[in-house]
Image 1: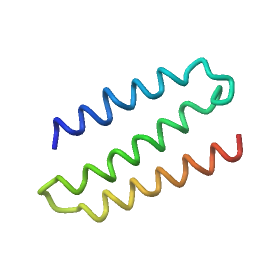
Image 2: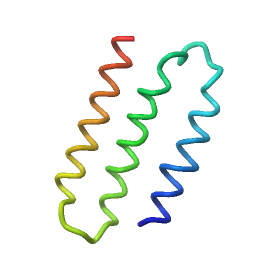
Image 3: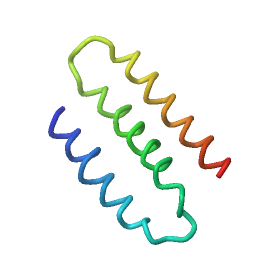
Image 4: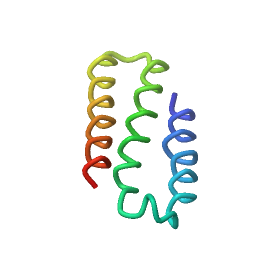
Length: 75
């Protein structure tokens, strides 16, 4: 699970945001995109974890995704 996390949250999310950094459409919204991307990655990765509290962690991830979406819509 830690390798998946490093790949999704580290490398893949970084590359995605790096490619959008100069796009005028997303200027000023990269933090919110990061919040959505991180929430999505965490939500998916919770399926691979063997520890307790998966439902709570996935609920927090969904909250991050919703908050990021609301903030992008307001911007």
